[in-house]
Amino acid sequence: MAIVNLKGRRRTIFLFLLPGMLVYCGLVLYPLMQGFILSTQRWRTLTRRVYVGLDNYVSLMHNSIFWTSMEKSAVFVIGTTVLQLVLGFLLGYLLYHQLKGYRIFKTLFFVPVILMTVAVGFIWDYIYSPAFGLLKPFMEFIGMGDRYFPPLADPNVAILFVILAHSWRQVGIQIMLFYAGFMNIPQDVIEMATIEGASGFKMIWYMILPLSWEVSKMVVVLQITAALRAFDLVYVMTKGGPNHSTEVLPMHMFVHAFENFNIGLGSAVAVIIFILSMTLTLILRRVMQRETLQY
Amino acid sequence: MVEASSGGMQQTIQNKRLVPESNTYLKSIKSRHWNKIAIYSVLIGWSVIVLLPLLWLLSSSLKTQAELAFNIWGPPKDIYFLNYYLAWTKSYMGRYMLNSVIATAVAIVLTDICATTISYALSRFSFRFNRVLYYLVIAGMMIPIHSAVIPIYIMAMDLGMQNNLYALGMIYAAFRIPISVFILESFMITIPKELEECAIIDGCSYSRIFYHVILPLSKDGILTITILTALACWNELLVAMLMLGQPLVKTLPIGVLGFIAEFSAEYTQMSAGLIIATVPNIIFYALLQEKIVKGMTIGAIKG
Image (tube, rainbow over all chains, first blue to last red; front, top):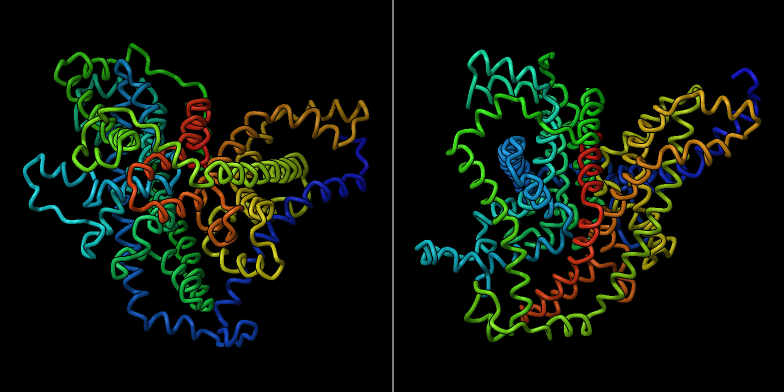
C-alpha cells in the first residue's frame, strides 16, 4: 500500500468513525457518566438539584428493602443459572445424539426464546392464576388440588415461580450453546475413550464435560450477567410484589426512580447494577479460567 | 479466550456438521432400545412443556368466556373467532405493530450504518488509537441498559423527544452498536487485504471500496446483526415504557401491557390479543429459523 495518501487516509478514518461514535458516545457513554453524577445528587424541586456526595448510597445501605432486593437478585441469578445450566446441558446432550427427528426438537426448543417477553409474562401469569389457570387443574389432576394456592401472591415462593417462567423462556439459548459445544468435540477423542471403556456417566463426567468446558464457562458468565439484568418479565408478572418479594435490582431501581420519583436513589441503584455486572463478569472469567483440555 | 473458542463454534454452526455415523460411542448408546426410549421421552417431555402453554393460550382464545369457565383444559367445542375480532378492534393493536415496525426499522438502519462504518475503520486501517477505540466500543456490551435509562429519560424530557419513535429507534441503535461492532469487526478482519489493494491501485476511493468490496463481502455478518437488532428492539419494554406515554405512539410490548390491564376481566379476548401479539415473532422465526438460531448463539457467544 505504497501509493496511499496519508492525509486523505486520516480524514477517511475519521469520517468513517464519526457517525457511529457520535451515536454511541451520546446515547450510551454520556448517559452512563450522567448516571454517576445523578447518583450523587438530590432533587430539591423539579429543577433544583444539590450535590450530596455519597448520601444516596448511604441511605440505600440503611434501607432494608435494598438488601431484600440484593438478596432476591442473588436468588434469581442463582436459581435461573442452576436451572438453565442443568436443563441446557441435559437437553443439549440428548440432542447431540441426533436421533431421528432431532431437528424438530431443536426447532421447538428455541421457540420460547423468540417470543415477546411481555407475552411470556402474561401467559405464565394466567397459568398460575386461580381463575382460569392451568396450574390449579393440573394439581387437581395429580391429586394435590387442596394444596393449590396462587403462587405469585405468596411472598415466600413468588420469586421461584418467576424463575420458572424466566427459565422456560431462556433455556433454549443454553440448549443450543451446549449442543454447538458438543458438536465441536472431535470425534476421534470420544472414539478413543469408548475403546478405553468409558461409558454412561463416566463418559459425561470425564470426557464430555471437560471437553466442552469452554462452552460451559461461557454459558455461566453469559447467563449470570443476563439474569442480573432481568426486568421485563418481573415487571409484567409481579411488579416486584408481593411485599417486595420479587423486587430484583433493576425493578428496585425502577421503583425508586419512576414510581417514587427519587432520581438520586434510583441512579445509585443503577450504578450498583453497573458495577456488579462489570465485576461479576471479570471475576467469573478469572475464576472459571481452568486448564482446558487440549485435543 | 472467548474469541478462541467462538471461532470454532461459529464454524460448527455454519457447517452444521453432523456426527459421523462411525461414532461408535453414540452408536452404542443408540443401539440400546431403552436408551432410545429414555432420550425420546425426555425430549418429548420438554416439547410438551414448551408447547402446552402456547396451545392452551390458543385454545382459550377460541372459546367463549362461558365455556372457559367450565372447560379450562380441553380444546374448544366450537371455534369462536369473535375474540380475535374484538381484541383487534377494541385495541390499537394494528397501530402498535406499525409503531414497533417504525422504531425497529429506524434502529436497524442506524445500527447497520454505524456498525459497518466503525467496523470498517477499525478492521481495515491501522492507526494509533485503533485498539483503544475498539475496546471502548466493545466495553458497551457490559453496560446494562438500566444503568443509563434514568439519564436518557431526563435527556428525552429536556429535549422534548418523548413520544418520538425515531428517538426511541436511535436509543435502541446506540445500545446495539457494541455487540454489532464486535460481530462485524471479527467478520471484516477476515476479508483478504489483496482485494482492497487491487482496488486502490485501480484508483478506487476508500468509500467506494467500502461500498463495493467490503459491504457485499460482509453480507452474512450484516444479516446477523440485523436479525439480532430486530428481535431485541421488537421485544424491548423498559425504554419504550419510559419514552412513550401517548396511546398512539405506543410500541407493541407496552400496547399489550395496556391492553391486558384494560381487558383483565375477559380472559378469552386477552388470550386472543396475546396470540395476535405473538404472531409476528412466530412468523419471523418460521421464515428465518436457522439464521436466527445461528445469530443468537453467535451473539451470545460473542457477548
